[in-house]
Length: 140
Image (cartoon, rainbow, N blue to C red; front, side):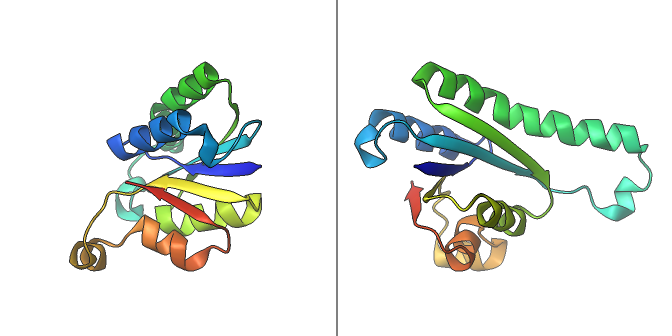
């Protein structure tokens, strides 16, 4: 099975990974995991003052902060893992990644905002639930 793991480096991601590792009956064995992370773009009005190489390195470093612990955790679990890192709006960009990967399952940790907070803040989970056509497992 091909499984996309939406990861952001938060405690919710750690909880999601731990839950999957502790409950391998949820997805079975011998899966291909794709850790997908999106770094929010630096606003254009600020980015124009940064050298291109500095901005590029910032994005690389931010992605590595999130993906390195996931990579190490996957290695300890014996999971096959590929990584995807992109820059953009997290909800929209993760939707694109899921569309490109065409996984059997999307798994993500949910921050558990209520309806009011989600309406105000926007919710990556809500966006992915609304815009993807694959089964989604939300772990809270």
